[in-house]
Amino acid sequence: MGWGKAELSLTLLGDKAMARLNRETFGRRGPTNVIAFPLNMGLTAPGFTGDMPKTEDRRPKTGIPTLMLGEVVISLETTARQAREGGWPFQELLDFFLVHGILHLLGYDHETAGDEASMTEKTWELMGVLYPRLRGNGLGLKD
Image (cartoon, rainbow, N blue to C red; front, side, top):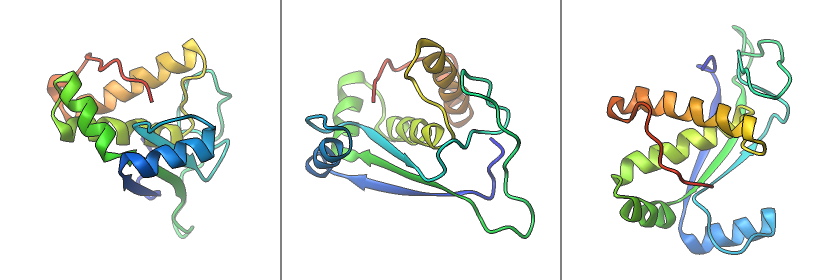
């Protein structure tokens, strides 16, 4: 993805804490599976070709401090419940939500049909790297 020197924070919560975070952040009731908090708004992944304007390659250069992308927060209880309901191994679904959150940190989104298509394509490309049997599949989950 071009961000080998970048860092992010990962927080794993239960549903109660996630519901509170979801309410305080978005005004939504109940827990969600993943929330991402980018620290570099407007930063996009190198070579990003979605509906967002392209930016120059902003990968960290040698000698420059590591770039902090942001924070990904995942509810373990929601992940476990959705894994059971969807018949997916817990670890695979947890990885899916982590990939989804990281893509949000890199500027991907799903606000429009075009944005969603770009994000879905990149998500399954990366999941196919982690789990080759998943290439071309979809979970049909919304965050």
